Length: 121
Image (cartoon, rainbow, N blue to C red; front, side, top):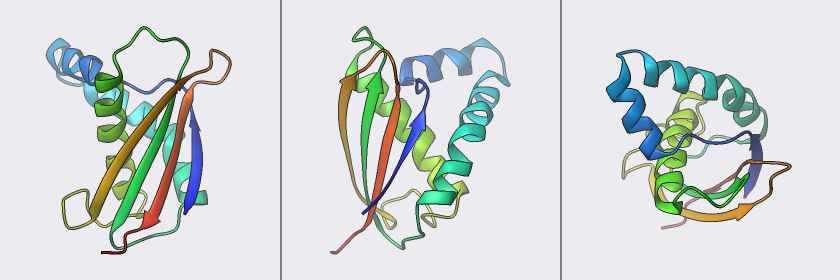
């Protein structure tokens, strides 16, 4: 299993929905900004796999946001980043065997611990 820490607060699904509703380019801008941080780290630390078990430990600065919204937003942003970085060929069923999530609170170091393992199924 290979892991990488991506610093910063991840965008929640509620925020993604709001961004898409606000103006046409808001979501794309937020995604580009997140990928500017995440992609270099992912490319440096995670080797390519054909089919992945993906786990995320999402570290929030506080416990105010709902876990389901945080996990959905992290999944969308980071699975897309894994494809963009060449770690997985696609983020569909044929390339993602499983997704798992945990969350924690640390006001001093929010971010996501992203782990990818070659699926054995």
